[in-house]
Amino acid sequence: MKVQLVSTWMLGLALANAQVYQPLGGILDRDGNPANMERVSELRSRTVQHDFSDETVEQRDTRRERADAVKKGFIYAWDGYKKYAYGADELDVLKKKPKTTRNGWGATLVDALDTIHIMGLDDEFRQATEMVAKINFHNDGGQLAKVFETNIRYVGGLLSAYDLSKQDIFLKKAVELVDLLMPAFDTPLGLPWQMLNITTGQGSSETVGTSSTNLAEIGTFQMEFFRLSQLTGNATYHEAAQKVITVMLEKNSPQDPTSKYTIPGIYPIDFDMMSGRFTGSSAYWGGGGDSFYEYTIKTWFLSDFMLHRNLDIWRESIQALREYGLAESSDGYLFPGFVDGAKFYPYVDTFTNFIPGTLGLASKLVGSDTYFELAEQLLKAGYSVFGKMPSNLGAEAIRFVRRNVGSDYLQLSAQGRAQVDAYGISLERPYYV
Image 1 (cartoon, rainbow, N blue to C red):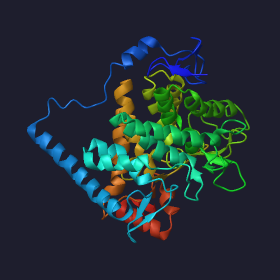
Image 2: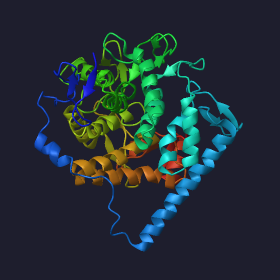
Image 3: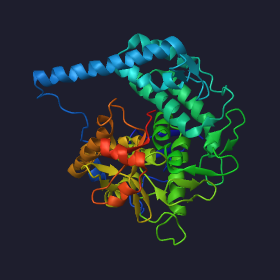
Image 4: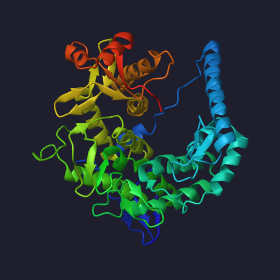
């Protein structure tokens, strides 16, 4: 049965017989109420882009110099990739050889399409487009596809390229790939496997013999799948992504004494896709949880503010983050950390640096000075991790010492204490990826 979107902002879908079809979950709030259309109308009048009309000549020149430096840095890296690994997933920079890490479909190339287009590198974009047209997603390179990574890098890259260029090849390839990924959702509860054999459609967990997954990997399909449904009129993609959220909410409740989900808005990381329940109580806005929160609010934006349930989840989560998930370091920076029940662990990784950008975006669209102030505080903390290092490259993960919590320092190794004395932080994973 053919489905068409009524418009790009409204989630009502019309069937061929003119009946209105509502996507599975999301358009109503957590209590079953529809979006406030007066409020939605007001939100649609807001803009995100900064107004440069009152910019001084000095400010303009500085901005352009910075943009040019970023562009030169990209071109330098791109030239290396193009010389030694063009069309491959990655470049092994030490060996100067291509690496196949994402099924051999050209992850670096596809992921960079929007950057190439935005920077006005027209010849590079044309050549990359020709490469995309040749990708055979049915050839998996002898690797299982990691469904989450395939979505954010390949599908996200293709859809971004389509939205910027309007070239049909990108949408065609995105549909082709997502249709190959859909068997991952063919599970009892509709929750996706982490890994997928593209050839057979057989799914599996990354931990062989289990059905374990994590919050980020089940919750990071919302944005690409919603956009794909908008562009194609096929509701299947959006419904699959929203069903994941519906099941997660239905199967886990802070009021359930057996639930690992105990603080409203602080969703644990570890998850079992067969039971639909969280299997651990540790919650975190960094690796393993990060993009669930990011996609929740951004999909609300993308829906033209109609996916009201997403807004409810975001508001509740931000409130819980402020109350339970943040702590001030001994040198005055505000960092997120691990939360396990009532316990807070002063550990943070570089993945949390998405938070200030997302908060800043949200502050513009919902009109929240509080969001923006928090974004500034978290940005300064994230920047400090880089700025304190001699190389100006931040560690993948650090521990910090909370203000007036001397036990944080005492629990560190001798090396960790020495690093705190030198840099104000302990380098848990001193490399940077």
